[in-house]
Amino acid sequence: MQKIELWIVTISSDQSIKEIATRLSAEGLTIRDVLEEIGCITGAADTATADRLKNIEGVVDIAPDMQIEVGPPGSEETW
Image 1 (cartoon, rainbow, N blue to C red):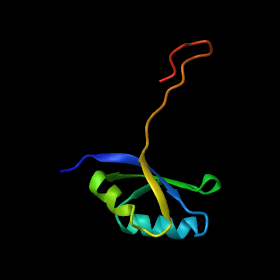
Image 2: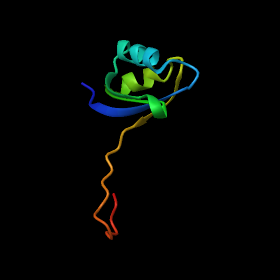
Image 3: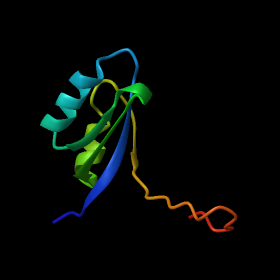
Image 4: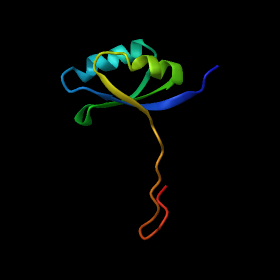
């Protein structure tokens, strides 16, 4: 069984983000957020599904969603 990971999907601006979100969901992405203002969709899927989603028309890129922590002001560590 493959591990479920979080992904950020960047979409092209020439298509409806809602239509692409529907296609991604139908292909196995569990949608978390549709960020229309920046042309991204976040969701969860295994690696094999994420690789398959790259072939959907309107998908520009799929990248792992990494958690980033910013330290308190003046802190040298930010990751």
